[in-house]
Image 1 (cartoon, rainbow, N blue to C red):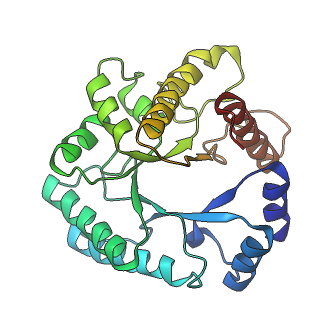
Image 2 (image 1 turned 90 degrees about the vertical axis):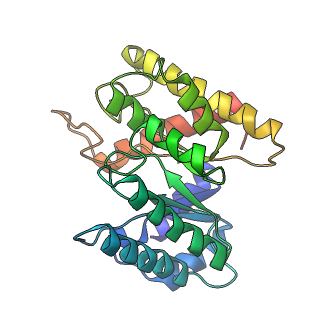
Length: 262
């Protein structure tokens, strides 16, 4: 744990986005390291326990969100929680019930909860999020547009209204580069992925412009190239963790050069 946190600090990251339910950890060690290294943190979460219906799902969602917040010392609360909420087959009333659970936790604890756009969640397509935003103007989004590109098999050229609405409500970006046939390219620096990279960058540029116009002092972006099976190994003799680190460092440096931010 100490090694990866030190590597993040040395590489110039400002913090970590953490999914605590993925592995065992010592919370005193984690929060001690975050404090010592002056790293911020945010949580990413999804309900991992099985459920039989949307009602049971919402009870588990509330339980998991409260468990996440309960991990934190009072002086080390997360910047936000990025929640992969609901399922793609939930009805609209079920979606809004799940969103109301998030609203209740946010209001109770004062921690922003962003709805992450993600395959197999309620937010898996742009038009679903657009419909929700028409009814719920206070909805906050963590935008991972790679999922929408993959699901729609397009760069959303015919969904510009829906995309523009989502950008207006986006508070955080997950910077993984996907394409029309998958949520993660082999390597964003390869020339065959130039169209995919540009499609993402155009959206990220627009989001940065929106944030500046709205007067936000800071913008948060998580480089989010994932491990296998997101990461393609093929017949390469490589270390998957090192390759994942390399890809995320590449996109971090690319974005810092573009936006002139540290």
